Length: 212
Image (cartoon, rainbow, N blue to C red):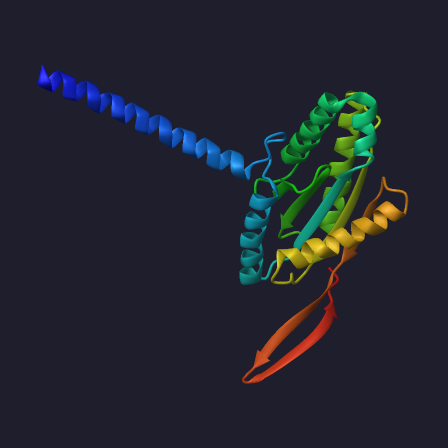
């Protein structure tokens, strides 16, 4: 009898521990994933992007940062309702996610803003990729009969700065230009960044414009 009771207690505790681990794992995932769209939230996106920056520095690969905004999203919500607005966000996120490589990084960084990191891709190829992504998005919008457009800012780095924040800052600045020029377009640029070289005890700092 005692052995039976102990076995039942053991199985019960084991089951509870398994459920607890699963719950903790789910909570951790939810804390790093945007609940609405299923893509990484800003926190996880920045973590993944920082790791990718270290890789491209190690192997001296180019990298492109892309910011994409859903134009007039608040107006869409007001006219068609919050539920349809949520569906729009999910549809855009999934379309982007399914259109990029597994090595690329996507995240929802604002209410109607997404960012994408394209490792190993320079200016010319990135421009082609982004034009294709936007074309696919517009086709998806047409299929849903949604009158929605997108603004895109693309900044290509041949030698990225050490901070993802600096790269996102340049992409944000370019998006500001897009929004001030009527939205619904793509702006591309190569980046001007500061690089630092150490020679013995001398530090040389210079600005350089990278063109791919």
